[in-house]
Length: 343
Image (cartoon, rainbow, N blue to C red):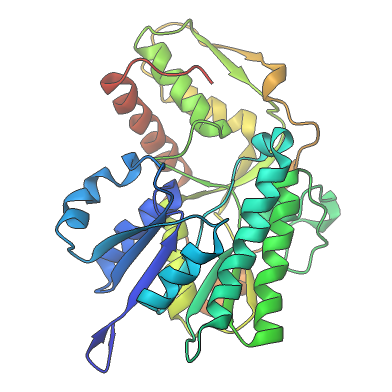
């Protein structure tokens, strides 16, 4: 997409994460935009290692080092590059970790988002389309009578992470209503696939199965709460949704639930992964108290009709394919680097 012969630019915070890296892949393949990855200098570039030749040769991708907790680095990145689109994906995104690091979680997710929106607001004659990534975790403890969860469902966050995302969500909408920023806020329900960090349930299960297959650990999978009901989407469908969000008649201040078409318990998800294993023996399951949250969001089933009606987006990748690709991702990682933490 070009305007007046000028190629559009997109800045991605959280560029090296699962979603950020897949979004960069999608934009490289499906647009002619130039991409700016905003990342802390200490971040691992493993998820974007395949893009490093492009970065080194300045072929449509550049990297700017900064931190969501450092206002000056954000403002400098925006002033220098003036991206047309900002995908704000950076966050302390692990709910379990947020119970032991609540201050860092609030600082990064709430103040970090505030820094970004303030920086964009303060630049004269600058009107980017900003995607503010909230989370389905804002809904937290939902009564079964409220399912499927629509956009107007009451927030009842069940972790410090979820509380921080309530702040993120409200900031995105506030800066549109108060200052006229063109913000679009999403509450993405569970999404996963290759490059998912091992602190999330389905990814640690896939990692443990891969380690069992390679004979690195006994055939026992450690789990947390298996009774939570989740609706599953593939990360590659998620980033396609995010592209449509900012290009399909974006409405300032709009907020959407986005999620997959398939719901099942965490236990059923684990059973699916085990069924995909090539391990010949029996794999047993045991509860690890360290993996249990003090309180859990146990009913996460979305109504996505608002977003689908607005953009025409529909998921394309089925649940089994997502789980298969996730397991294969971990098989390759474990094969190439067998010294893995058992977490």
